[in-house]
Amino acid sequence: MPLLPSFRLLLSRTYFTSAKKRPFQVAIDGPAASGKSTTAKMVAQRLGFDYIDTGAFYRCVTLAALSKGINPSDPSNTGKIASIAGEAQISLETVFPERTTSSASASPPTTRVYLDSIDVSSEIRTAQVSKHVSATAAIGAVREAVLHKVRSIGANDDFAEGAATARDGLVMDGRDIGTVVLPNADLKIFLVANSQVRAERRLQELIKNGADPASGVLQVEDVRKDLEQRDELDRTRKVSPLKKAPDAVELDTSGLTIEGQVDIIVSTVKGLQSRQ
Ligand SMILES: Nc1ncnc2c1ncn2[C@@H]1O[C@H](COP(=O)(O)OP(=O)(O)O)[C@@H](O)[C@H]1O
Ligand SMILES: Nc1ccn([C@H]2C[C@H](O)[C@@H](COP(=O)(O)OP(=O)(O)O)O2)c(=O)n1
Image (cartoon, rainbow, N blue to C red; front, side, top):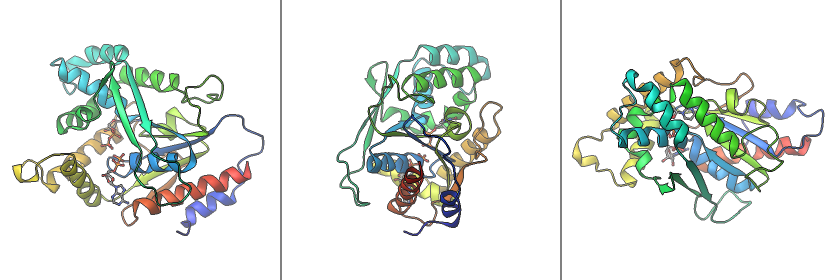
């Protein structure tokens, strides 16, 4: 897969004037269902890097609130949601089935998400959690709590020392990774895809995970509206809104295969590493 012009430009710049000690960091941001987590996991697998899905943290806080009967979309619940975020014990475990250097990987990596030691990997992906997660993520105190948690598992500028990760680098995806969480990331990608493509992909994923399209609840139009509403909330919130970092490279996955978008990012990382 040839590199897009913006990626070639990135590789032609001289970025590394001094030796860096910390492992390589890749930040992937973008709107809902643009392919961030699928791409990030496979890039991590190909490069032997760690993977952190930050959206899972906001989903866990949302699930914890809903399971206590607290509605995250009700502004009078902000304080309660912030306390839940502070107390929640969240951990991620990504299983990389096999490390491969070719683009054809046998099975994709899987991430299990634990909330207070309970596996909630499926529960955090329900339509109910998706409906309220942007409201949760707009609360400043929730974002601080999540930032603290992701930093404590190695997402900081000197995570080589005593870090949770034993791997060669880190791929992290979310909405504010290039702007707030990893502002000095070695490579920042802003993944986009048109909303119709994103809705169709997300619908297929929901069906694959057991949702029934015949129930009438799950139509591609509804999924598209839900994604667009969430993007609007994520883009317009006051704290750490979804936005492309000035030094991020945009990659439109609308016409790409998953392998194609992974190849572009892996080649770019290798190009940058060879200049370090
Ligand atoms: N290029 C692509 N072609 C087809 N399906 C894709 C592509 N990229 C991602 N997908 C699928 O789209 C869905 C949403 O991707 P996901 O990685 O969950 O997005 P995000 O993390 O941005 O919300 C997943 O089912 C994923 O497998
Ligand atoms: N770093 C992040 C990650 C996610 N969020 C918010 C915004 C999203 O609507 C929710 C859920 O994110 P997630 O990546 O799991 O959602 P999608 O897979 O894109 O549907 O969390 C955020 O505000 N900041």
